[in-house]
Image 1 (cartoon, rainbow, N blue to C red):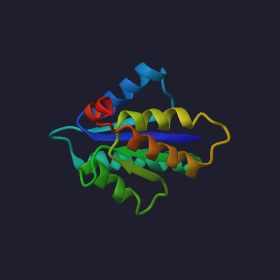
Image 2 (cartoon, one colour; image 1 turned 90 degrees about the vertical axis):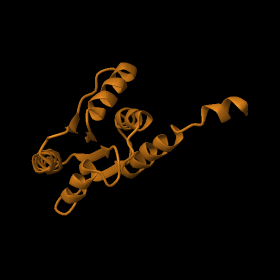
Image 3 (cartoon, helix red, strand yellow; image 1 turned 180 degrees about the vertical axis):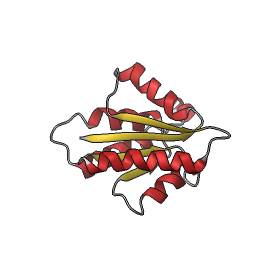
Amino acid sequence: MIYIILASHGTLAHGILNSAEVIAGPQKNISTFVLNPGDSIEDFSKNLQQEIEMHSKIGDHVLVLTDLFGGSPTNSVISAMQSLKFKCFTGMNLPMVLEASLSREQSDIDFNEYLRKVANAAQRGIIDVNQKLAG
């Protein structure tokens, strides 16, 4: 199984999961972690690492999607990489989350191919609408 964790500053992770569910229906095996003003970064990191560890230990492939490289959520994930094996992409957007959610349902998908599809969806989701309409 592929387990997905969305981590962000503020409620972005909750909101992007909600948007994905509006489009694709209820999603299982996804959790969200949000870091709000005044929250303890240490507690956030500890809870996030425990979630990653729990799913890694039961044999799940874990993919963590974060909002911003260099931000506290991503730095917390990087810290967890010291002792745990999982994948992380940053720059989370809705096309990325949808691809991550829907592609993992394919029973024969290779995890590395899955990761390529998720990364490609994130990049393809960035479109200059003015240019697209002019072209």
